[in-house]
Length: 299
Image (cartoon, rainbow, N blue to C red; front, side, top):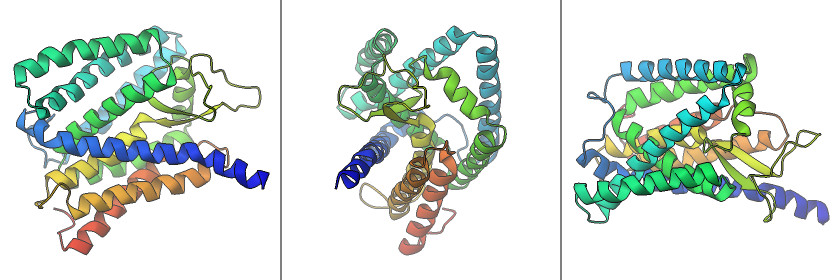
């Protein structure tokens, strides 16, 4: 009986993470339409597959610079860069949300700017797990919504496929993604979600134990953002009635299936590349939703 309780308790954070993904995807879908109205697309032509290649190139360069900063013990550069990126992305999250609430563009800006600065300052001074998670939800929803309205169906699928391959290579082959994660963990930055195993857990005081275990589960922000890009894209670029299209709904379900498949391997205690599971799940879920609804798979 005790073993069964322990097993269930160990899996509770995984269900919480699944819930976080659903929350992020729901908020991203809600923000997509006002973001389009506000002209917040990141590219001029969302149907161009070249956008996917440019983004992959940016990730490679950015990752290289972060690794160089870690190697040279310049973690302050990483901290400053990520905090500035967080402040900007949080602003892009608050801005359309206040627009949805009925504020005009000027008032949305007036409210969003100080809130973004204040939340980033709180994150810097008090990076507790719940502050990081709240910030992470806003950042992930805003980023995935912007990319979702900026990448058509084909570019989104190409992007997710390439990222899944890159993630697998960087975790299983070169292992530089593991080095990067370990290098920035102590900076307490919102590049991940933190789900405590115990209610009295403190991320600020958390240190790696001798046996290599921590008192919380972690999921990279990108693991929530990337599959959500296709969810938003499938809802924006496919005509439908109601809040969500069937292909987008299938993509959401596929994300969860991929996540729980990933969970089975993670619980064995070995580092896993998340995107092959999550991106694979969301793409297959999208295809299933398109087939069931009679929607052309490529939009």
